[in-house]
Length: 368
Figure 1 (spheres, rainbow, N blue to C red):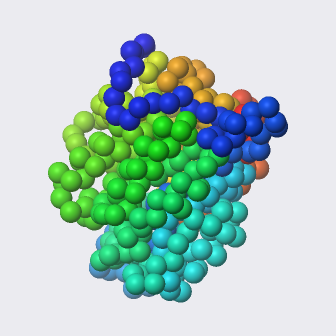
Figure 2: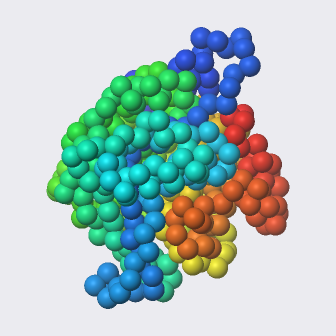
């Protein structure tokens, strides 16, 4: 299926595989370019026992979370250089987050500590099949107050990709800071990835949520969302949502559907890919893991440099890598503790007979 790309949203500068700074030195052997994850990092208090409702939970286990933070660790575990940019409180929770991200291999030079606001918290109940129910405590959280554009500019210098999204967009000034970062990244040839990770309860209003998500999608090259996100945004199936979002300007839209796999829509065609059958323990962070796998694979193959022109046959192995990362994450409890390594992903794909995807996974960290 062929589509003509329209000129919408931010001006689209061709993605520069060397990054804004590296382009000036293209005669040299370029270093591996990193992904910058911009957004919230928080503490998840996860139910110690299965429960369909937070009201019935008797004990919680704390864990570092936040969609962009999870994605940053997913990238690091796979061997893809990554930096995390955001803000936590200058409190024990914030320091624990910083230490956890640093131990994972993420660069945390862009993680700020706010002295006057606290680290955001989320309480999570997991039902018998590992599906989460969230309640957030921010009022405000340190992430919502992030406005340091100089830190963002510094992190993006020479980067391959900016990934952002989630509840970082619900309030000011973090929303405007992120939207400006998306515009700046795109104008300098840095690939822009966005995941709305819809949590309706934290938005000021539905109208505000829909308008902000639409604006963010118009500034992105790649949009990834879940089937649950689609239901929260509007009626219709995942493929219909992907088509509608593509009209806003991104070159690639991917909707994850859990055990049913994913659907992808590009300017050149559409693809429905089945999921991998695994024994699910906990689905928390699986979508963020998928995003980390997809970005890593697109960079490893070089497809990130031409998203608007790739066909579904080229895209399939990268989606298989992403699906494998997401599937493996569901087989263990927690988000960050469950994220797989590159070797685990390679072995998993080989065991499923997906040798081309396994070869791509083995190259992650080389940026093509």
